[in-house]
Amino acid sequence: MTRTARAYTNIALIKYWGKKDKQLKLPYTNSLSLTLDRFYTDTKATIIDADKDIVYLNKQLLDETKNKRIINYLQTIRDFYGFSDHFQIDSINHVPTSAGFASSASGFAALAAAINETKQLGLTRQELSILARNGSGSASRSIYGGFVEWQAGFDNASSFAVPIDENPQIDLSLLSVVINKHSKKVSSTVGMENSVKTSPFYPNWVTLVSSEIKEIKQAIAKKDLQKIGEISEHNAMSMHALTLSANPSFTYFAPQTIKIMQLIQELRQKGIFAYATIDAGPNVKIICTKESITKVQEYIEQQLSDVTCVVANIGPGIQYI
Ligand code: 2P0
Image 1 (spheres, helix red, strand yellow):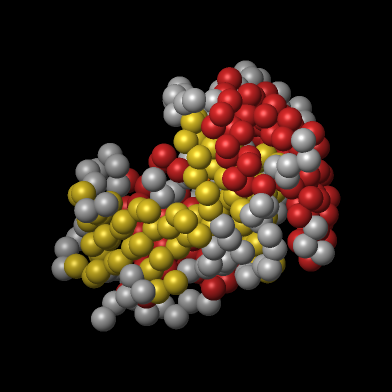
Image 2: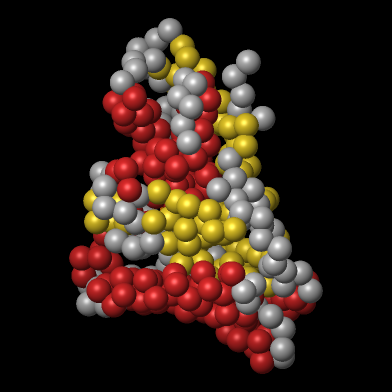
């Protein structure tokens, strides 16, 4: 019986922003994330007697415009491991867009694990991380639970994620504040490329990440949540400074994004624990304690009407069910 692979999404505390190799998705810097428990993708791969792959997402057959990235990825896997089988992919995404997380991390991690299972490739988690990275950079980190570091490396074999602490005993909860009305965003791929090519601050970003990775790992080891929050917020703002300083300039922030950041500062002035991180979109993820999260949510919902709040906790790595 072929098992279904389950992968959870992750949120980067030290961001991946820029590729030195587009094809292999080799990043310029290491990045560090937290795997979350609420949002995941379940994927099953079945070998079919056909010369094309077919992909069902949430029980809907994807047409050729929508399945292209997945089909190309399956071809990459065939080329890697030298087999010619085609697959039916059945994937259920429990990462609702209304939760404000990207599904590519859990999606490609689950797909890599599903092929590993069906083809009995016997991959180690390191090899699985390499394979997932070839689908989407952030997917390399969703192989592990808890705090995870993706080591940039210099070629396909040396760029993979490693666990920092898979089951951290730390009082951390994450509030995702989803802005309900916003305009179409620039994809991460294009956003990264423009930042690398045109932001005069890109070399500083590479230097900054290398020191912030060291600092946050020390803070994780000491379970110093305040330091984790401070470093994460600073790193996220520095990533967004790359988009603002690109030429032409662009931003993922919406007016509500800035408003939420102001509310977070007000909360801190009141002594309530809250630090922001923001990905390639307008939504704000707030690092809270189990005690502060209700107060943070109430305060934000009182001040802003058109937002949805979703709570997540620390989650596990790849599972087979
Ligand atoms: C991250 N992001 O570290 C950063 C922070 C968004 C902002 O990884 O081109 O979908 O597939 O490798 O992984 C989103 O980019 O990009 C992302 P590809 P991916 O989580």
